[in-house]
Length: 326
Image (tube, rainbow, N blue to C red; front, side):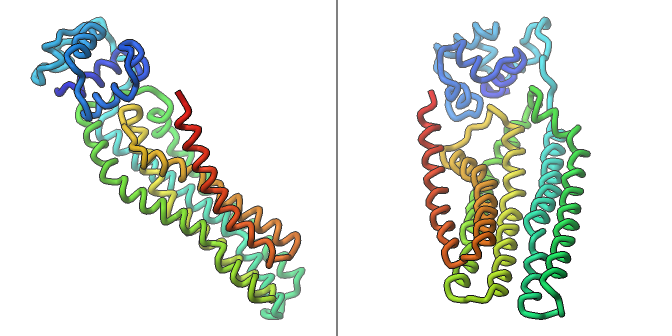
Protein backbone atom coordinates (compact mmCIF):
# COMPACT_ATOMS: atom_id res chain seq x y z
CA UNK A 1 0.00 0.00 0.00
CA UNK A 2 1.45 3.35 -1.02
CA UNK A 3 1.89 6.31 1.33
CA UNK A 4 -1.13 8.21 -0.02
CA UNK A 5 -3.48 5.30 0.63
CA UNK A 6 -2.01 4.78 4.10
CA UNK A 7 -2.64 8.41 5.04
CA UNK A 8 -6.24 8.14 3.80
CA UNK A 9 -6.84 4.86 5.62
CA UNK A 10 -5.26 5.97 8.88
CA UNK A 11 -6.99 9.35 8.87
CA UNK A 12 -10.40 7.80 8.31
CA UNK A 13 -9.89 5.06 10.87
CA UNK A 14 -9.14 7.76 13.41
CA UNK A 15 -12.33 9.46 12.25
CA UNK A 16 -10.64 12.68 11.15
CA UNK A 17 -11.44 14.87 8.18
CA UNK A 18 -8.70 16.39 6.05
CA UNK A 19 -9.26 19.68 7.85
CA UNK A 20 -8.81 18.05 11.25
CA UNK A 21 -5.59 16.32 10.25
CA UNK A 22 -4.30 19.54 8.71
CA UNK A 23 -5.09 21.42 11.91
CA UNK A 24 -3.17 18.89 14.00
CA UNK A 25 -0.16 19.37 11.73
CA UNK A 26 -0.55 23.17 11.39
CA UNK A 27 -0.78 22.96 7.61
CA UNK A 28 -3.47 23.66 5.03
CA UNK A 29 -6.16 21.18 4.03
CA UNK A 30 -4.90 21.46 0.45
CA UNK A 31 -1.56 19.99 1.53
CA UNK A 32 -3.24 16.93 3.01
CA UNK A 33 -5.43 16.62 -0.07
CA UNK A 34 -2.37 16.70 -2.35
CA UNK A 35 -0.68 13.97 -0.32
CA UNK A 36 -3.74 11.74 -0.50
CA UNK A 37 -4.15 12.25 -4.25
CA UNK A 38 -0.42 11.59 -4.90
CA UNK A 39 0.05 15.10 -6.29
CA UNK A 40 2.82 15.70 -3.75
CA UNK A 41 4.77 13.84 -1.07
CA UNK A 42 5.29 15.08 2.51
CA UNK A 43 8.86 15.94 3.43
CA UNK A 44 10.79 14.07 6.12
CA UNK A 45 9.64 16.36 8.94
CA UNK A 46 6.01 15.85 7.93
CA UNK A 47 6.55 12.07 7.73
CA UNK A 48 7.86 12.08 11.30
CA UNK A 49 4.90 14.18 12.42
CA UNK A 50 2.45 11.84 10.68
CA UNK A 51 4.06 8.86 12.38
CA UNK A 52 3.66 10.51 15.79
CA UNK A 53 0.06 11.53 15.16
CA UNK A 54 -0.99 8.10 13.89
CA UNK A 55 1.22 6.27 16.42
CA UNK A 56 3.00 4.25 13.74
CA UNK A 57 6.62 3.99 12.66
CA UNK A 58 8.15 5.97 9.82
CA UNK A 59 9.12 2.65 8.23
CA UNK A 60 5.47 1.70 8.16
CA UNK A 61 4.60 4.90 6.31
CA UNK A 62 7.47 4.76 3.84
CA UNK A 63 7.57 1.04 3.00
CA UNK A 64 4.86 0.07 0.52
CA UNK A 65 4.98 -3.61 1.44
CA UNK A 66 3.63 -2.96 4.96
CA UNK A 67 -0.17 -2.89 5.07
CA UNK A 68 -2.30 -0.76 7.39
CA UNK A 69 -4.12 -3.74 8.85
CA UNK A 70 -0.81 -5.20 10.05
CA UNK A 71 0.28 -2.10 11.93
CA UNK A 72 -2.78 -0.47 13.42
CA UNK A 73 -3.40 -0.96 17.09
CA UNK A 74 -6.12 -3.49 17.74
CA UNK A 75 -7.78 -0.96 19.99
CA UNK A 76 -8.62 1.26 17.04
CA UNK A 77 -12.02 0.32 15.71
CA UNK A 78 -13.23 1.55 12.33
CA UNK A 79 -15.65 4.39 13.01
CA UNK A 80 -17.12 4.50 9.53
CA UNK A 81 -18.52 2.04 7.03
CA UNK A 82 -16.36 0.82 4.18
CA UNK A 83 -17.51 1.21 0.58
CA UNK A 84 -16.40 -1.44 -1.90
CA UNK A 85 -15.92 -0.87 -5.61
CA UNK A 86 -19.17 -2.70 -6.33
CA UNK A 87 -21.09 -0.51 -3.88
CA UNK A 88 -19.56 2.66 -5.31
CA UNK A 89 -20.48 1.67 -8.87
CA UNK A 90 -24.01 0.81 -7.72
CA UNK A 91 -24.28 4.23 -6.09
CA UNK A 92 -23.35 5.95 -9.36
CA UNK A 93 -25.87 3.79 -11.21
CA UNK A 94 -28.62 4.75 -8.75
CA UNK A 95 -27.71 8.42 -9.01
CA UNK A 96 -28.07 8.21 -12.77
CA UNK A 97 -31.46 6.52 -12.41
CA UNK A 98 -32.63 9.29 -10.09
CA UNK A 99 -31.24 11.90 -12.46
CA UNK A 100 -33.15 10.34 -15.35
CA UNK A 101 -36.42 10.45 -13.43
CA UNK A 102 -35.88 14.01 -12.21
CA UNK A 103 -34.87 15.16 -15.69
CA UNK A 104 -38.04 13.70 -17.20
CA UNK A 105 -40.14 15.34 -14.50
CA UNK A 106 -38.54 18.75 -14.93
CA UNK A 107 -38.79 18.59 -18.72
CA UNK A 108 -42.48 17.73 -18.51
CA UNK A 109 -43.10 20.61 -16.12
CA UNK A 110 -41.19 23.03 -18.35
CA UNK A 111 -43.04 21.84 -21.46
CA UNK A 112 -46.43 21.70 -19.74
CA UNK A 113 -47.38 25.13 -21.12
CA UNK A 114 -46.81 24.01 -24.72
CA UNK A 115 -50.37 22.63 -25.18
CA UNK A 116 -51.78 25.94 -23.93
CA UNK A 117 -49.65 27.97 -26.34
CA UNK A 118 -50.46 25.61 -29.20
CA UNK A 119 -54.24 25.67 -28.74
CA UNK A 120 -54.24 29.44 -28.25
CA UNK A 121 -52.28 29.82 -31.49
CA UNK A 122 -54.79 27.59 -33.28
CA UNK A 123 -57.67 29.65 -31.90
CA UNK A 124 -55.94 32.88 -32.93
CA UNK A 125 -55.73 31.70 -36.55
CA UNK A 126 -59.22 30.14 -36.51
CA UNK A 127 -57.80 26.69 -37.11
CA UNK A 128 -59.28 23.51 -35.67
CA UNK A 129 -62.49 25.52 -35.13
CA UNK A 130 -61.47 26.44 -31.58
CA UNK A 131 -62.65 29.45 -29.62
CA UNK A 132 -60.31 31.17 -27.20
CA UNK A 133 -62.21 29.78 -24.21
CA UNK A 134 -62.11 26.21 -25.47
CA UNK A 135 -58.45 26.55 -26.43
CA UNK A 136 -57.62 27.88 -22.97
CA UNK A 137 -59.52 25.07 -21.27
CA UNK A 138 -57.80 22.42 -23.39
CA UNK A 139 -54.44 24.01 -22.67
CA UNK A 140 -55.06 23.99 -18.91
CA UNK A 141 -56.03 20.32 -19.07
CA UNK A 142 -52.79 19.62 -20.94
CA UNK A 143 -50.82 21.48 -18.28
CA UNK A 144 -52.42 19.49 -15.47
CA UNK A 145 -51.82 16.16 -17.22
CA UNK A 146 -48.15 16.86 -17.97
CA UNK A 147 -47.45 18.20 -14.48
CA UNK A 148 -49.14 15.16 -12.95
CA UNK A 149 -46.94 12.83 -14.99
CA UNK A 150 -43.90 14.91 -14.04
CA UNK A 151 -44.74 14.63 -10.34
CA UNK A 152 -45.07 10.86 -10.70
CA UNK A 153 -41.45 10.76 -11.90
CA UNK A 154 -40.36 12.77 -8.86
CA UNK A 155 -42.18 10.36 -6.55
CA UNK A 156 -40.44 7.37 -8.15
CA UNK A 157 -37.06 8.71 -7.02
CA UNK A 158 -37.94 7.75 -3.43
CA UNK A 159 -37.20 4.09 -4.16
CA UNK A 160 -33.50 4.91 -4.56
CA UNK A 161 -33.09 6.92 -1.34
CA UNK A 162 -32.13 3.93 0.81
CA UNK A 163 -29.17 3.12 -1.45
CA UNK A 164 -28.08 6.72 -2.02
CA UNK A 165 -28.41 8.41 1.37
CA UNK A 166 -25.69 6.47 3.27
CA UNK A 167 -22.96 7.70 0.92
CA UNK A 168 -24.32 11.24 0.73
CA UNK A 169 -25.17 11.73 4.41
CA UNK A 170 -22.87 9.43 6.39
CA UNK A 171 -19.14 9.13 6.90
CA UNK A 172 -17.47 6.28 5.04
CA UNK A 173 -14.11 5.06 3.85
CA UNK A 174 -13.28 3.56 0.49
CA UNK A 175 -11.96 0.04 0.16
CA UNK A 176 -8.44 -0.27 -1.17
CA UNK A 177 -8.21 0.71 -4.83
CA UNK A 178 -11.63 2.39 -5.07
CA UNK A 179 -10.20 5.88 -4.71
CA UNK A 180 -7.77 5.36 -7.59
CA UNK A 181 -10.48 3.90 -9.85
CA UNK A 182 -12.88 6.79 -9.29
CA UNK A 183 -10.19 9.41 -9.49
CA UNK A 184 -9.32 8.09 -12.94
CA UNK A 185 -13.00 7.97 -13.93
CA UNK A 186 -13.48 11.57 -12.83
CA UNK A 187 -10.44 12.78 -14.74
CA UNK A 188 -11.63 11.07 -17.93
CA UNK A 189 -15.18 12.32 -17.50
CA UNK A 190 -14.31 15.94 -16.72
CA UNK A 191 -13.86 16.93 -20.39
CA UNK A 192 -17.28 15.51 -21.32
CA UNK A 193 -18.82 17.22 -18.32
CA UNK A 194 -17.40 20.63 -19.22
CA UNK A 195 -18.44 20.32 -22.88
CA UNK A 196 -22.02 19.31 -22.13
CA UNK A 197 -22.35 21.87 -19.36
CA UNK A 198 -21.19 24.61 -21.74
CA UNK A 199 -23.54 23.35 -24.45
CA UNK A 200 -26.48 23.28 -22.03
CA UNK A 201 -25.83 26.81 -20.80
CA UNK A 202 -25.50 27.91 -24.43
CA UNK A 203 -28.94 26.41 -25.14
CA UNK A 204 -30.42 28.32 -22.20
CA UNK A 205 -28.90 31.58 -23.39
CA UNK A 206 -29.94 31.35 -27.05
CA UNK A 207 -33.40 29.96 -26.33
CA UNK A 208 -34.81 33.49 -26.42
CA UNK A 209 -33.38 34.33 -29.87
CA UNK A 210 -36.25 32.96 -32.04
CA UNK A 211 -38.83 34.69 -29.87
CA UNK A 212 -36.90 37.95 -29.83
CA UNK A 213 -36.55 37.86 -33.62
CA UNK A 214 -40.26 37.22 -34.17
CA UNK A 215 -41.25 39.88 -31.64
CA UNK A 216 -39.20 42.49 -33.48
CA UNK A 217 -40.31 41.73 -37.04
CA UNK A 218 -43.76 40.09 -36.83
CA UNK A 219 -47.00 41.29 -35.31
CA UNK A 220 -49.11 38.14 -35.23
CA UNK A 221 -49.69 36.74 -31.76
CA UNK A 222 -49.99 33.23 -33.21
CA UNK A 223 -46.38 33.39 -34.41
CA UNK A 224 -45.28 34.63 -31.00
CA UNK A 225 -47.07 31.74 -29.33
CA UNK A 226 -45.35 29.24 -31.61
CA UNK A 227 -41.98 30.79 -30.77
CA UNK A 228 -42.84 30.42 -27.10
CA UNK A 229 -43.17 26.71 -27.79
CA UNK A 230 -39.72 26.75 -29.38
CA UNK A 231 -38.40 28.57 -26.30
CA UNK A 232 -39.76 25.93 -23.95
CA UNK A 233 -38.38 23.11 -26.10
CA UNK A 234 -34.92 24.68 -26.15
CA UNK A 235 -34.92 25.10 -22.37
CA UNK A 236 -36.02 21.48 -21.97
CA UNK A 237 -33.23 20.42 -24.32
CA UNK A 238 -30.71 22.33 -22.23
CA UNK A 239 -31.93 20.54 -19.12
CA UNK A 240 -31.65 17.19 -20.91
CA UNK A 241 -28.05 17.98 -21.87
CA UNK A 242 -26.91 19.23 -18.46
CA UNK A 243 -28.74 17.08 -15.91
CA UNK A 244 -27.26 13.61 -16.61
CA UNK A 245 -23.63 14.73 -16.71
CA UNK A 246 -24.15 16.86 -13.61
CA UNK A 247 -25.54 13.85 -11.76
CA UNK A 248 -22.60 11.64 -12.75
CA UNK A 249 -20.06 14.34 -11.90
CA UNK A 250 -21.63 14.85 -8.47
CA UNK A 251 -21.73 11.09 -7.91
CA UNK A 252 -18.01 10.76 -8.60
CA UNK A 253 -17.24 13.67 -6.28
CA UNK A 254 -19.46 12.24 -3.55
CA UNK A 255 -17.52 8.98 -3.71
CA UNK A 256 -14.18 10.77 -3.56
CA UNK A 257 -15.46 13.47 -1.20
CA UNK A 258 -12.65 15.45 0.43
CA UNK A 259 -10.02 13.23 -1.16
CA UNK A 260 -10.83 14.71 -4.54
CA UNK A 261 -9.00 17.80 -5.73
CA UNK A 262 -11.00 20.04 -8.02
CA UNK A 263 -9.10 22.22 -10.40
CA UNK A 264 -9.98 25.90 -10.58
CA UNK A 265 -11.58 25.25 -13.94
CA UNK A 266 -13.85 22.52 -12.58
CA UNK A 267 -14.85 24.67 -9.60
CA UNK A 268 -15.88 27.43 -11.96
CA UNK A 269 -17.87 24.96 -14.03
CA UNK A 270 -19.68 23.69 -10.95
CA UNK A 271 -20.53 27.24 -9.89
CA UNK A 272 -21.86 28.01 -13.36
CA UNK A 273 -23.88 24.81 -13.39
CA UNK A 274 -25.52 25.42 -10.02
CA UNK A 275 -26.42 28.97 -10.96
CA UNK A 276 -27.66 28.07 -14.45
CA UNK A 277 -29.96 25.31 -13.21
CA UNK A 278 -32.34 27.80 -11.61
CA UNK A 279 -31.27 31.11 -13.18
CA UNK A 280 -32.34 30.56 -16.79
CA UNK A 281 -35.67 28.84 -16.06
CA UNK A 282 -36.40 31.65 -13.58
CA UNK A 283 -35.50 34.27 -16.19
CA UNK A 284 -37.75 32.52 -18.71
CA UNK A 285 -40.62 32.52 -16.21
CA UNK A 286 -40.15 36.25 -15.52
CA UNK A 287 -39.98 36.96 -19.25
CA UNK A 288 -43.15 35.01 -20.00
CA UNK A 289 -45.02 36.55 -17.10
CA UNK A 290 -44.00 40.07 -18.06
CA UNK A 291 -44.71 39.53 -21.76
CA UNK A 292 -48.08 37.87 -21.29
CA UNK A 293 -49.10 40.53 -18.79
CA UNK A 294 -48.16 43.49 -20.98
CA UNK A 295 -48.38 41.80 -24.42
CA UNK A 296 -45.55 44.11 -25.42
CA UNK A 297 -43.22 41.50 -26.94
CA UNK A 298 -41.25 44.15 -28.79
CA UNK A 299 -39.98 45.53 -25.48
CA UNK A 300 -39.78 42.57 -23.13
CA UNK A 301 -37.08 40.84 -25.21
CA UNK A 302 -34.57 43.24 -23.67
CA UNK A 303 -34.74 41.06 -20.54
CA UNK A 304 -32.57 38.41 -22.25
CA UNK A 305 -29.42 40.37 -23.10
CA UNK A 306 -29.66 42.08 -19.71
CA UNK A 307 -30.12 38.68 -18.07
CA UNK A 308 -27.11 37.25 -19.91
CA UNK A 309 -24.88 40.08 -18.69
CA UNK A 310 -26.24 39.67 -15.17
CA UNK A 311 -25.45 35.94 -15.31
CA UNK A 312 -21.81 36.64 -16.15
CA UNK A 313 -21.68 39.29 -13.43
CA UNK A 314 -23.08 36.86 -10.85
CA UNK A 315 -20.46 34.26 -11.77
CA UNK A 316 -17.75 36.87 -11.32
CA UNK A 317 -19.18 37.90 -7.95
CA UNK A 318 -19.34 34.28 -6.77
CA UNK A 319 -15.72 33.75 -7.76
CA UNK A 320 -14.67 36.95 -5.99
CA UNK A 321 -16.45 35.95 -2.79
CA UNK A 322 -14.91 32.48 -3.00
CA UNK A 323 -11.40 33.95 -3.23
CA UNK A 324 -12.03 36.15 -0.19
CA UNK A 325 -12.86 33.16 2.01
CA UNK A 326 -10.05 32.39 4.47
